[in-house]
Image 1 (cartoon, rainbow, N blue to C red):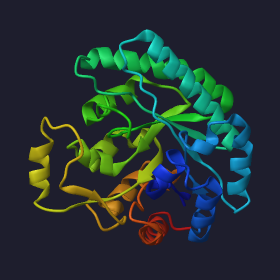
Image 2 (cartoon, one colour):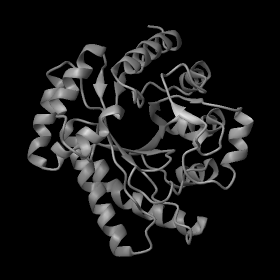
Image 3 (tube, helix red, strand yellow):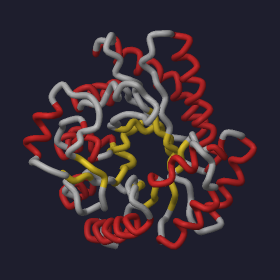
Image 4 (cartoon, rainbow, N blue to C red):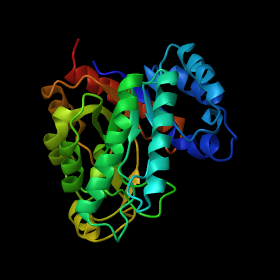
Length: 295
């Protein structure tokens, strides 16, 4: 059965911005949930000094869990080659951070969808940048995972490879044993795509998954599709919610993944309304994972 982890979505500001929460406090909060691991973020304030990385790992492992994934947001579509070179070196540092934390997976993104960039130009820049990082990933035994992402919190533009067609072309162009896909079904809705169609196209490249769910606050899915056409930014009709109570069909998702031989990490990226929501999401996913991967 795929192992289950969680990302501290509700506490990002406290952990990565104002420092009002420590990583130990997050571990203590999450430990009673019965998770197998905790996904970490490269921007956590306590991780900015490499000397702290071994301690961060020990704190998680002391509670019977591991850090399976490190969430990172490189920007590889900048027109300045010096900027891209710095982003490549930063991603390499994050790969080393992941390895020291014990993580076998490190997220990589394409970069921002800058208006002046053509699809062909952007793909060439991103492919070259990711391929420049892969030797370090292989050396460290860390797999780079490309997510069908929406937008980093600190970016001016959405993800270059947000749309399914661009994402699939990018995935197809990079063939390496230390490169795979981190599938997030909710992000497909934000792109105006069908999450199951996307999954069917990349399922044999999926090595990890972000479990999240979104629900419509008003209107219909058809209204959402009309709004997505040519519109950047979050769709107001959609909101994060407890997993299993939103738009995603987790039975269909898990059937596709199981059929493709998936047995990788599933990391919860919800719980934005607090621990009670996260408790419900853990219970739902545990039940569904047992149903689709019976022991």
